[in-house]
Image (cartoon, rainbow, N blue to C red; front, side, top):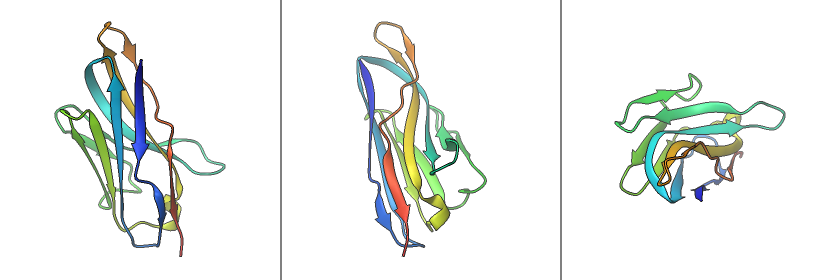
Length: 120
């Protein structure tokens, strides 16, 4: 069984920062791309940022220059550093990863989500 567990969400004032973490665990052979998505109330889930095993990154236009995605392959963990947060960033943030298990099965699990609220 493979799972992703997010942490690091919370309440922050506009202009503040948060760092999200997402750790993969289970019978993992390898992890390909990893990413962060978010879903605000009444809106569709959207891609925030993604990162390849080699470190190539991709960001949504709305977070470029403010958010930074990174990963630690040895720890099977992806991070999202969020700076200059805005009320529009309020959402549940989910991590996602392309995982090949030890049994050679390809999975794309989701984490349980972590709430980020930006408000004064």
